[in-house]
Image (cartoon, rainbow, N blue to C red; front, side, top):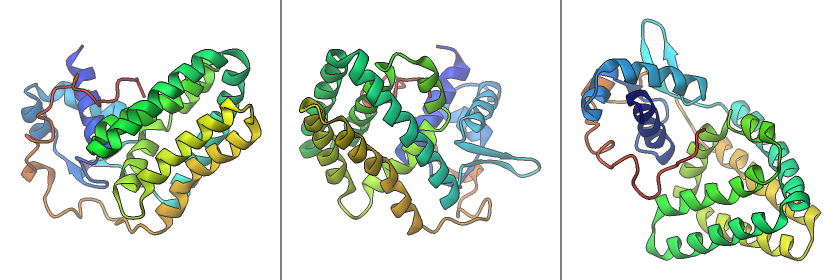
Length: 244
């Protein structure tokens, strides 16, 4: 793995998992030091993260973790819902058995992760569940389009599930319900649950209050201790392995 890919993956995972806060300033030099590499691969990773919608690079100011608006979230989630609906239908038609095998495996991991409070494991299984639709649908362009906003939406869903409201338990129930409906051949009913499952992020987002001002986090990036955030190995269990 190249240093740039390593930096990209580890910073992305820290944003998605919540180790780095929405809107916080990121220090290129301090992150490079924590990752034990030069600033050049971190700088290149910031550009790729910007292209994925996970950071904003502000001239004369710095690099910040993204801060979404409700309209950003609405359009991204609607886009995801459209893509997954089509992927679900095509995967069911073309590669049903392979899809079911992957969905069942993902649900089993989620079921084991919840009582252990293994939220990294749960997140990885949640991703695997949805990727079963997208990767078994037979259309690589659907997956390519999905990857445009996947990481940003995942970062928001992690925060939703980690907050009040038992969203993680609801998430598991909906994954299980979709699997049971599919096994019964109820494709339209599955698609309806899937759409609600994706769009719940909009109701949560409406209750959030993110500052529109850059750099309002108490500590600037240079003062942030990144050591613990980037301490775990990039290949550790629970890390997101797909390229999004």
